[in-house]
Image (cartoon, rainbow, N blue to C red; front, side, top):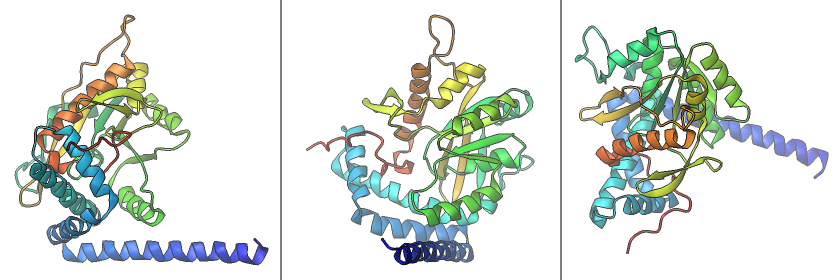
Length: 311
């Protein structure tokens, strides 16, 4: 490619990226004007309509059928429809993350968010020790990081950036305004994560995605791979490990639930067993998903290869 063509290609790439960012910001702006409830309904309607047209829909149906072989095909379709609904609502709610979390400890029943496990949260915040919090892609999974930041827990959320650069930039802008520390899952991120725990801070991370170089776990009775980094840090720092989930409730409300610290399995030397610890976290996530399967991200290829659908 000639120098002129190369410069033209680079310029075109920057222009397209700029237009994409502007388009995503425009969608966010429209969602803000609609308000959180109307925006969530519109987002849900769009994904319920368009979701079945994309390949991820087939992945979701196959995942649900393999995870719940005892359910009928109609029940499988209903779960996936609910998953598209939840995904659309979550996407639309990004524009309102600065106001969506409105929990008031002095008046816990007044807002759209309720919290369970406050004593565990207070212990994490006040014990002066490092801590680890794992979560999953359930309901609006961004809310726990906002809760931690809002109420003084020194926490760093480890996240995987969206594949689309424009969406990743827009989402990062929202996250940086509403959350505490942020660390992208990237080469060398483990050193930054260890530094957080060295300083007595807390790490929060979603643990329900496929990780090619991960440890073997069983999820819904099927083999899967899990990122072992949180278990390795739990072993190294001997710090408490809690789970946190979000449950989507009627009328645009949410419930955040923080578990007690997990009693993780240990090896013959008394140290936390990494594979066993990731299995323990995975078991908690499976229990959450079984309770509210329509609120989980089934469109993700959690099992590789994607399970074959039952006939």
